[in-house]
Image 1: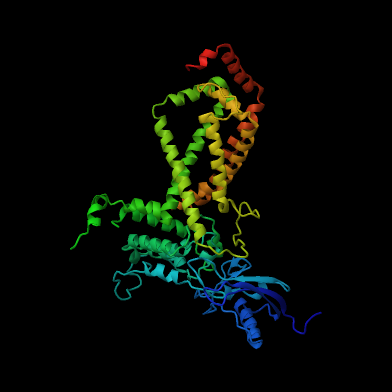
Image 2: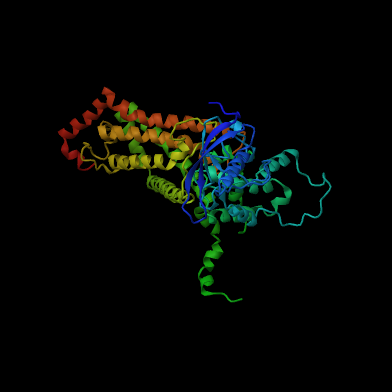
Length: 256
Length: 265
C-alpha cells in the first residue's frame, strides 16, 4: 500500500553502546517517510525525534558543520566509511543514495586507538596527539608576508593544498584492515614538507609523528588503498610514499 | 650533571648512534621499508633461480653443467647466507607486522565493504593485498618442502641420486605426485603474493610518482604472471618430456652398473 507521503521505508541496524565499557549490540529500527532529499545525518535526526517521542534514548553520533569540511561526522554505513559515495562525508551523503526498503547497517569507526564513547561516537583524540607531536611549524615565520615574497611555485602550492585538504575525520583508519593512520599522518607530514616554512623541522617532525602514531596503537600500511577510496577529502596514497621518503631521509640525514 | 651507570654502559652505543637502525626495525614505516627491500631482493633471487631452472629443458648436460659451475663458486655460501637472511627478515617482519596490525582492531566490524573502484582482481574474498600473510605462509610451506626435496634430499618416497647428479635428482622430485601438486599450488600462491608485493615494495620504499607508478604496477603484474607460470610449468612439462626422463634414466643405469661411483663423487 502506498503511504500518504512518498518517502522511503528503511530498516536501520544501529550499534548501541551506552558507555565505553558496555558490551554494545546492534538494534533494529524501522523508519518510514524518509525523504530522499535529506542527508544521512538528518535521517538520523528524524530517527532520534521518533525515539525521543517514544521515550527512548536517542542515538549518539558525532557531527558539527554538516558541510563536509569539519571532519567531525563519520560512521560505517553498510561496511563503508562515510557510506557508498566516494569523496563524501556522512553529512554530505543524501538518502537518494539508498532505495526504498533498504536495510542499512550503521556501526562506529572501529580501531583500538579510537575507543567508542557512546553508540556511534568514538574518541579520535589520538589524531590530536599525533598533531601535537609535530604537525606544526614552530619556527618564527613573522607576520603575514607579502604574497609574492615567499618563493613557492604554483605546483608545490597545489600539492601542499591537496594534502592540507585532510579534515581528520578518521575514515582512513576506519576503512583500513590494519586500522592504520598513515594516510592521515602522511597528509600532515607532506603538507608541510612541500613548503619552505615546514622544511626546517621536517626530520624531527616525521620521526616524532610516526613514533606517536605507532605508540597510539594504529596498525601499519599494507598498501591496500582502502583509505584513499574512503577518504572524503581525496587524500592520495602518494602522500604515504612521501612520508616514507621523508622518514628514510630523516633516518639517514638527521642527528636524531 | 649526574650521569648514571646506565648511561655509561650505553656510551659506546651512543657513539655508534644506531638509533636509526633500531627505528628501521621497530617503527611501522621502518619495518615496511625492510619488508619491501627484502621482498625485492627475493624477487631478484626468483629471476636467477628461474633462469637457472630453464636449463632443465636443455637436458642433463646443460643443467648439470650449470649446477656444477654454480656449486663450485667460492662465494656461494656467502650468497646462500645472504639469501637466508633475506628470507628470515621478510618472514620475521611478516609475523611482527601482522600481529601488530591485528592488535590495532581487536573488535571487528559486523560488515565490511571495499570502496575501491579500481580493483584488478575483484574477488569476493578481497584482493591479493588482503591475503599477503596467508599467501606468504603457503609459499613458505612450499619452500620448506622444496628444501627437503632438493637440498636436504630427505624424502623417503623420492628415489634420490648422488648429490652431484643434479639433473636426475630434479627429474626425480618433479616426477613425484606429491611434489607436483605442492609445487604447482605453491607457485600459484607465489604469483598471487607477487601481484601485490612487487609494486607494494616500491610504495613502501617511498617510490610513488605519476611518472613511473603506473608502469611499476603493470610490470609487477607481468612479473607475477611470468615468474609464477615459469615455475608452475616445470613440474608439469618436465616429467611429460620423454627425452628428459630418458636422460635421467641413463643416470640410473650407470649407477646400477657402477655402484661404487656414488661413494666418492
